Image (cartoon, rainbow, N blue to C red; front, side, top):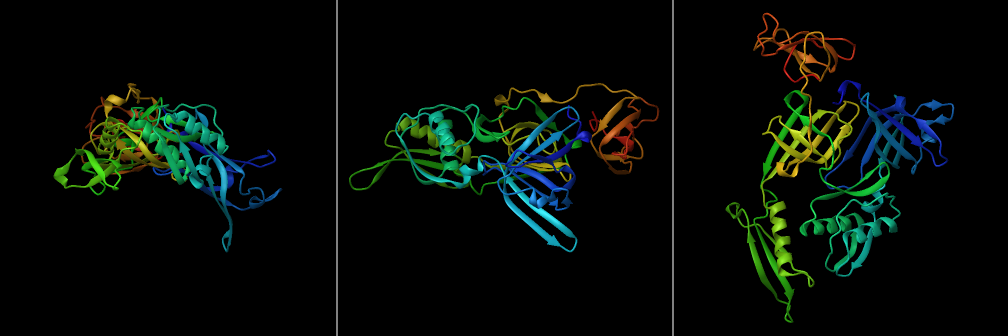
Length: 416
């Protein structure tokens, strides 16, 4: 169980000459993000550009230098983001000197590089992906992705990241499952979605907000499979797959490849309907930061929507506010094998617990006035079985350190 009151972050610079500088005490507005339509982790922060014995910090940090972000929760201490300085922006103002830094991980080169590629029929997924890693000098320790045999593939002026994502999408059509491209501690790999061992549970008491939106804007309701052109330049419709046509006809064309069977083409068309032929339900959750959650991980959500598993499409960690924002998509529970991470412990008066933050009330009864309370360590002063307990807010907590101000009655599940 993660102790949110003990989470801390630090940033470390690694120069080209191998020197290290811990700049934790100078960093402001630190955060990192993994966006849905990007493969590279983006880290950004502002440094107070103070003078040190080595000169101003702007003289110690240069474009191309490596920056690592570490997090600890009191038990686990690990790297959560890494990359090289891409944007270096010192600023001088009346209030002082600042240095704005933007960092991207090793996959950034693939996002910014274009190439022409041809892969003959029968080339495997692993050969294509690892070959591009090697060509663009992307560090990798292993390949954990799928290895399906592809038809003839041709790319002209395509971004390398798009080539890899297209190949992985083609492997998915061939039954490989959903894989994502991401880097961990400076090494790239292709990882199956939902491989996280710990699945964190988010309830009403440990989330700040939940936003849900349903949209038909990008809905596809019909896919036509088109064959190759004849001598006159005409193409025959070989199959038509219908979806939610009650929302109208919003058609997508799938052109069967010269080396692709009609069966495989229809399967690919069905895959389009499976992905884009459903109502888009966008879920955005704001919660206290869990530094270990990444794009592609599974989480379990019970706040604001029906109990279900979701995967993280995008995530933004904000170290300044110790919070995170997750963009989620619902998944079928049959696909999830991991255990949810939540405590089953029974509590008693006198126990020292970790209060998650939220509201403390002047009494335990329904309708009692409540006030904001910060997260931190607290002692259970009274429990549900105490005399005069109305049980709407069954636990009375008193903070044990200065991090929290909780001193009153709180709801079930607001501490562990």
